[in-house]
Amino acid sequence: MHVTIAASARTGVKVLRQLAAALLTVLAVSAVTFLATNIKSPEDVARSTLGRNAAPEQITAFVAANDLAAPQPERYGRWLGDFVQGDWGTSVVTDQPIAPELAPRIGRTLLLAGVSFLVVVPLGIALGGYLAWRWGSRSDVAATSGLTMLSALPEFVVGLGAILVFSVVLGVLPPESSTAIAFGTPQAQAQAYVLPALTMVLVAAPFLVRLTRASARESLTATPTRAATLRGLGRRVVFWDYGMRGAAVPILNATGLTLVHLLGGTIVVENLFGFPGLGQALVTAVGTGDTVAVQAIAVVTASLFIAASLLTDLLATVFNPRLRDIR
Amino acid sequence: MSVAIAPPSLASPAQDGPLTRVWRPILGTREGRMGVPLAGVMVILIVVGRFAAPYPPDKIGVAIPGSAPSWEHLLGADGLGRDVLSRFLTGGTSVLVTPLGAVSVSFLLGGALGLLAAYRGGVTDQVVSRLFDLLLTIPPLLTVLVLLASLGRSPLIIILVVGLVFIPWVGRVARGAAQPVVTNDYVHAAVARGESTWWILRREVLPNIAAPLIGAFSLYLTSGIVFVSTLSFLGLGDQPPSSSWGLMVAESRGLILTNPAAALAPALGIAVVSVSFMLIADAVTRHVLRDTGQGRPAR
Image 1 (cartoon, rainbow over the protein chains, first blue to last red):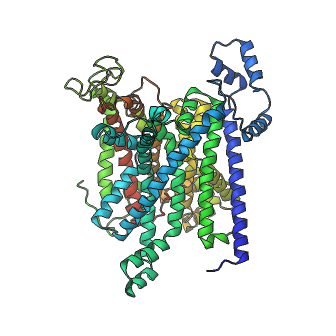
Image 2: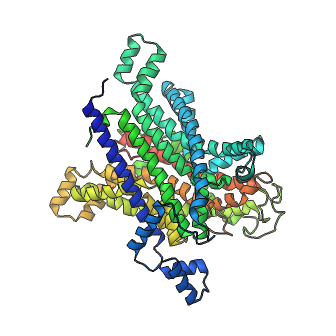
């Protein structure tokens, strides 16, 4: 296969277009988030922060101090300018700047999602391929029904099951992460990641396994694969070079979606384990009505999601020649 | 189940209503025979269970806080000394009712939009499909959390917000299922008779996509149960002293080493409800639709 200049130029254009679309989506999401968190009138925001019995003078002062009276588009523009420059506002609840509080949390959440991703991808693809090879066997039926049920469970129920097994019955892992991650030794810190990551692996695995299984099955039963078997090629060659390679594009897509899925999973899993990441901060901010923090965290989280799906699209464009010419 | 499944040639679809045509094959599948009774038992437990509660569910200090199961308190006590069994028996309502409300909202609005898009085609289809695509780029839990932060967290708002999040999914299923139906002759005949758009969609299109819609309803009910119990677990749904199952798990999570039953019982309740509807959805999508040849709903 030789890549011509024209083909790589087309890929380049496609990639640029995807980048632009992702950037536009982030902008749209930030605007919608800004609107949604600012539905309430300035006076209501002031009252919900200051308490029901706030004096009218206090409310006026709060509205002026937080610049709530200006028209929405103007305030959005100002907020966006500040956000891009790293000023993510001041929490209405703790009165602390938000950005320095969030920075280490972003790192931890990405690390948690990244570790889970590195575990679930090889494991899920291997299991899916194995089940496709053993399609219809007893182990296939058992594993597939088990995964279907697993996929119907909320993340916190799966995590609770993991806590039950590893902390209560076996007693080998801590049921909670917050103190270990803040104050623990490096070993305790690493240990604190294990159960949250395991939970995320269990939550994300069913989708990847089932999709790999179905795609690999399709390419294993396709005519070229059957012809290869009839030509007398070894089972290993048939499985890898015909079965799995033929299913590479859907598996790659599923891998990307798994990354998005894992990022979403952090919201609940972090709250179950007291893991000090973005998702925990988001739920706390929603619970306390800290709209400024909700806004910042939601835009950061949405940007991570969009970046993950952009990565998926880019990989698909690079690996799947058919996608390069579309549109 | 004693219901014998008639071979397809003997069944007369013309005389059966759409519901009979869907339910009978569901009970003919392994998933259906597991899922339907399981869902039935859980619904009965949730509806009638409250009358069997041995203690008032909100009464503090009826047992030693955090104590393990005993004969007086079969599932032990939670951190405030409330009887876990009584709380379990009274706390399932919102796990079922709120998702049911939310998914109904999404089917009414999303289903109507999807049907209209499939029927009208052209610009309507373009606009509706783009709208769905846009809504699908934002992760659902994030959308719900942002909306709850600004709108408040009453049960009605939760139903509306969660319903809103499912609209694009349901809309795409309805659109996809209706597209092959709207080109049929009986639809053209109805148009020629001068029937109104809504009459045609309701009387000619809807009955013919009942099976995929029932499958999708069951599937999104599972997602709704997961969603609503997760909100309640995160402390953003029912508020204390409610004994809502998700909230019970959150409140008793710290007791996992002293009385695991306090968190496990409600977690198991949520799991069984969710899995049973998932099994019904699976029975519909994997068997009934394939056999009746109606469109497959999207995942």
